[in-house]
Length: 221
Image (cartoon, rainbow, N blue to C red; front, top):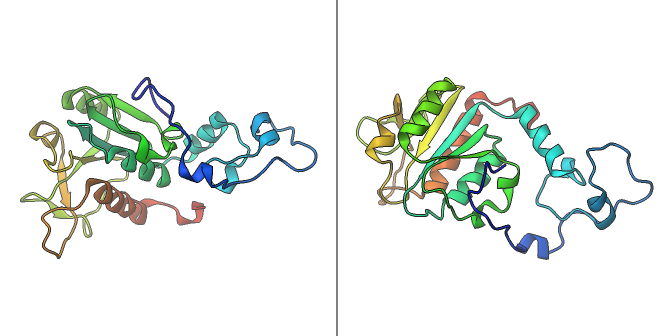
């Protein structure tokens, strides 16, 4: 769920909408529960949501997600309009992160989010110092994800349950200012010739590591 104008325009129709996924109009008598959206019941629900949320109002979906969110946050630096941010938001929604924090530029490319930002809390911080105050106020352990000297392998690192995972700009990595906020640093084990992996991929790997360590898998869809 966006917190105020990170990107002012609603996205246009997407490929998955054009393919008519989802369900058609509700058959038979409509349910009386107020969580259901009359327009969706009448016209069908073609949104990219799990079946459990078919026909639900958007605010009802967000309220149910808020009841179950995991206590990890995802932070990504936006210094040059990074196109990977949408992918990070979409993955954070899939793993039910508490929130995504964008540090730096306010505007970001939402295409990769596939409208999941409607259901995911997304906050903006103009500077690393602003985010540092947020992390301190919310008692978050801050973990930088950066393949620099001294970073521990994420595969063997015990991620804190309440934490903020920091990811840098594609190419340049974390800025020194944001890196200085972290109490610890981890890196993803690599074995090929490339120096680094895409930040959207890296975010997915580390978020899933948190899931493996802390999530109740009985609650998965």
